[in-house]
Image (cartoon, rainbow, N blue to C red; front, side):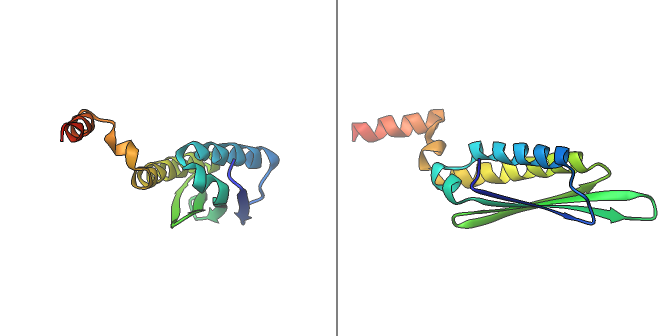
Length: 123
């Protein structure tokens, strides 16, 4: 799990089930981080309830501070856990691109990468 997770509720009382769900899902983001980034990652999750004329709406924002970058995503729906799942998907896509830029060997897995490596050996 990441080193530090901060969960705050704005106009929303965080119950134990929600806290446990959010902690579990944030912990699964580790697989998309480099080993160096896992040691110093800080995740802040903001859960907010917004009252409208039509009913309640829930906004979720995840801010992830990793070496060299700050990744954030936010979304709002009528269900708190659904909003969190949507935001988690957005964070995962951003973490994948972060990892591809930081680790050079990930880009060399295709057929053209193999061709380039074999061609280098010939020279």
